[in-house]
Image (cartoon, rainbow, N blue to C red):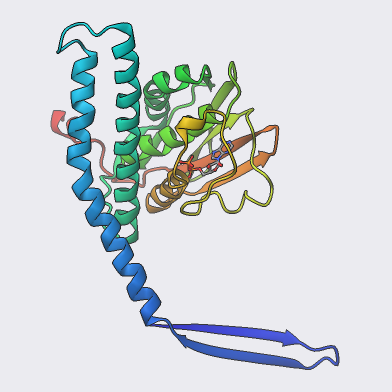
Length: 272
Ligand code: ADP
């Protein structure tokens, strides 16, 4: 593997120099490859025991070992929440790995954008209640898009949970939908911390994080938005961001409309 660089330098006397360099980066590429492979193997190995730990905590919380005392419940809840965080972190690592290796599969079908938005808001209920944030839909536009429904839900979930996480207590998050010629654009607006201007171009990069968050123990990984961007783009959409520090942020994501002949969901097709 080689890395090529071309630099054009304009001198003051009007002449122009071109510098070309070629560097052997095989070792770096190989090291990166080994690191990715290691993360992937470890993530796979960790996922099932961690899921089982989380499940066990859930059973105890549900009273499988007798009704827990308030103190036991409190401890179990903390353990359950942390097990849950670990499973999500592992899932994010596995998704990043699938994206990098081109192995993420997409089950593209026609769906109603309104149904997707409603389901995402519904799924985020517990999370936004925890942060004492309300999520509201502005308008009720609908229309057909051609997407992988579950992956698109993951995209909106990520944006909604970030919006809740970075909002002040009692805050409101607005989800709107706008029809464009070739796509529907969904926007998620919060009036939270906002993102410093110099970080705005970077937040969709892997592992990008800005300073501290309101709820210390719910620290993220900086992987969520990288996954959002990759999924949106794989489906033929794109992402964008408007943010002002101290005022809030609006994240935009587009979901393409179907072309003539694109299939609907499997259940619908079987009904016909
Ligand atoms: P994380 O898992 O750390 O939240 P993300 O990729 O989802 O990772 O986000 C990357 C960083 O972008 C976050 O750490 C945060 O600093 C910033 N960010 C994302 N969404 C928002 C938002 N709605 N308001 C303010 N900052 C945000």
